[in-house]
Length: 160
Image (cartoon, rainbow, N blue to C red; front, side):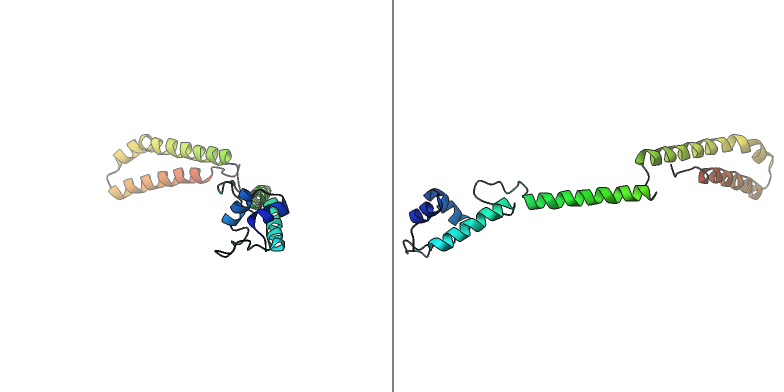
C-alpha cells in the first residue's frame, strides 16, 4: 500500500493533483486513519482510465467547466444538425416544403386579391340592391358576389 506522495511520484503528478483526483472521484479515497492506503496498480489504472475518458470527451476533471459541452455531446449535436439539414433538403427536393419567401408572397397576393374584391362589392352591388324590394333577393346577390370573390382567392397559386 502506498501514500499520496508515492502515488503522485508513480504517475508523475503532484500531491495536490492526486488530492484533486480523489476529490472528484477518479480515485477512491483510502479508509480513514489508514495512512498509505492506496494500491499503486489500482491508482495507476484509475488514472489511465481517467485520461482515456478525457481524451474521448467523456471525462470531467478539476478545473474543467461543466457548462462547456463535452466532445461526445458536441459530436452528437453535430450529427443531429446534419441529419435535420439533410431531411429538409430531401423534403425540398420532393416538393414537400416551400421557401418561406415564396409562401409569404403567395399569402400577400391572396390577401391583396381578397381585399380588392371585398372593397369592390359595395360599389358593384349598390344600385342593384337599392332596386330590390325583397331582402332575400338582396341577400342572394351579396352571397353570389362573395362566392365569386372566394373563387378568385382559391385560384391564387401558393405553390411557388
